[in-house]
Length: 287
Ligand SMILES: [Ca+2]
Ligand SMILES: [Ca+2]
Ligand SMILES: [Ca+2]
Image (cartoon, protein in one colour):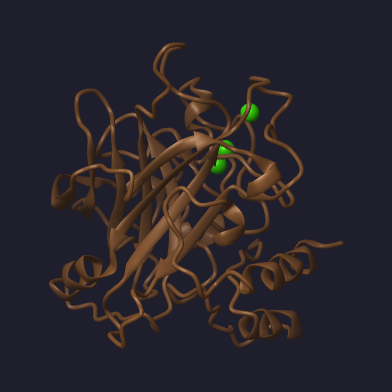
């Protein structure tokens, strides 16, 4: 079974769930998975398995979700992301994610990151928020930074932040430890949710207009510091100091609306179009 075929099966499972609002801690079967090589094992750069984004086969490494709040508005609702990490963070008494986890969005398909959403839990900080990209081009890992000042932050709560072990019996997949060759410990999910209207407002301030039908593409990253993406990049083997473009690295998820509808590319295959019909969010390998 190739990755697209396995993704199709996941889509059909997912579609049955897609009408109910999804919480930040809900089983991953209720979220939309990113299939494909997302992400390589033991390629984080700081010796910290708790920051290694991992996934293989149907033990997916990244998910998204969107709750539209049942309203007709195209710019409200809640946008959620989940990353699978190799190991838990914190000491043996206090299990906690003490790093940063970012989702970068290319909202105008220009190849650069236009906004970052994520968690800054490094040191004494405890921030969930929306951040501007830094002053570089933001076209490649080496030229991408995150502003040290948030556009907006949210108090962490059980409604917008979750950190818990994988439970494949409810989350789907075949194992709680997709990485037996690394730490040998169960994998953890870090998840967060952000009001979509705030993302829309931030981007509007940068002359980028989006709504829930706009194609977006994402990168993901873990970091030990607020500004540089220095630990792991989702979908890329290492590469945190690469000068290659995000597009050339194959780091972006396929263009999709926040509802998970893929936007067919001109060369899109029948499978891609079928995935669109299923409302599925999948990642296609890029060279
Ligand atoms: Ca990784
Ligand atoms: Ca593990
Ligand atoms: Ca990686």
